[in-house]
Amino acid sequence: MDLTGALWRTSSRSGNGECVEVADNLPGVVGVRDSKDPSGTVLVFAPVAWRTFVAATRRLSAA
Image (cartoon, rainbow, N blue to C red):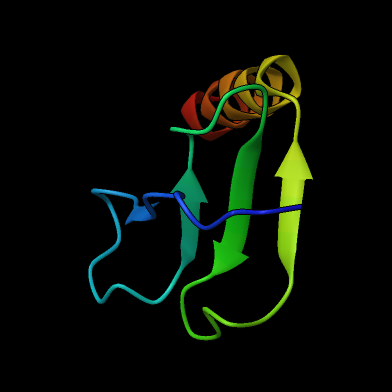
């Protein structure tokens, strides 16, 4: 998959920048990678799957 145009960002809650990076600017996919290894493996999710994951994570962290 060509992720050349991906704009990677880290969470605003990341204090030291060492966490996951997300690229959600590409049509039909959301890329996720390790910020410590930007040339490594990228996981690719459908946008609805990524939104579901984020929503579930927020619910669990609020509990």
